[in-house]
Amino acid sequence: MRLSTKSRFAVTAMIDMGLRQNQGPVSLAAISKRQHISISYLEQIFSKMREHGLVESTRGPGGGYSLSRDANHISVAQIINAVNSPDPLEEVSGEGGQNGYVAAEELWTHLNQKMDDHMQSISLHSLIAAQISKGGEVPANNSPKRGVFAKKPQTTVTRKIPNSVFALGNA
Image (cartoon, rainbow, N blue to C red):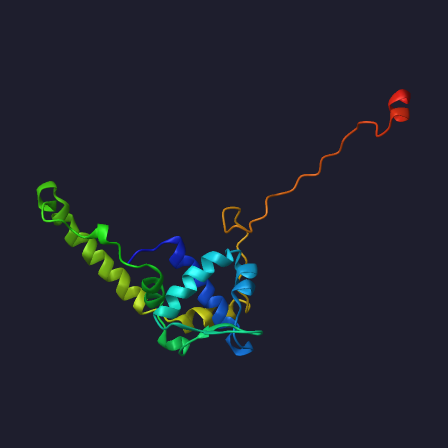
């Protein structure tokens, strides 16, 4: 299991969608605006989640995405595994034992299994319920490094330059 930015955004988007599930399908544009994640990135994430049967799409006006099953039956591990396809470069080669890689592989496999077990035990419903108990809305992360819509702080520049030739003559 790989904990990446894509998996973090996927869990965040699923919580956002779960909070608004009773209002009908949720558009990616609305999630993008609330969570400051680019629409194209959300399209990639939701495409993979749709392939894995976590969400359903509705086309047309008023369309968007909705959970394909009850949030109690969707685990965080399923979301993470859906958006992170396995990388063939992570396979252990036959010559890996010579440099100690295989010896350490048991440690990483054990850690990965523990992490996977923990993520399997967390349901999307529990994350949604926790968010509702905190105030009902997914808090907006105002981090300057978050998403393509992150706003840079604006500074006001005041100039003391005359705005005309006559004002310049009087100065």
